[in-house]
Length: 125
Image (cartoon, rainbow, N blue to C red; front, side):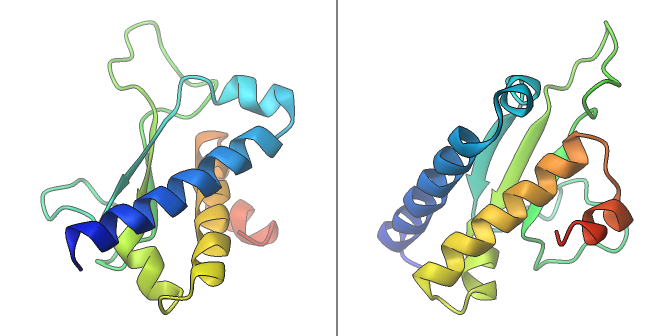
């Protein structure tokens, strides 16, 4: 993927993330105020990824979930979206890509709010 194409997909992903965050209820937005959302192409090989995660990972929550933070917590919570993987999942279709960005972001927000994979699956995420 060219740098220009990669930037375009990141811009689309960022716009979707901003729109989703604005649409969330105020109490949820308040809980997410310390979470950074970042975009990269694909997971790095040296990145800490849990067992079962694969190279085609769409997103990743890093850090301590809401309500479990300690006074000595060094890691700021972060949600990483892997734009190239999301684009691949959407087969390069922009509408499907936007939907997948929203779904993936909601999934990772769920992890930050303390939901596990089973809890997310029950919610369609």
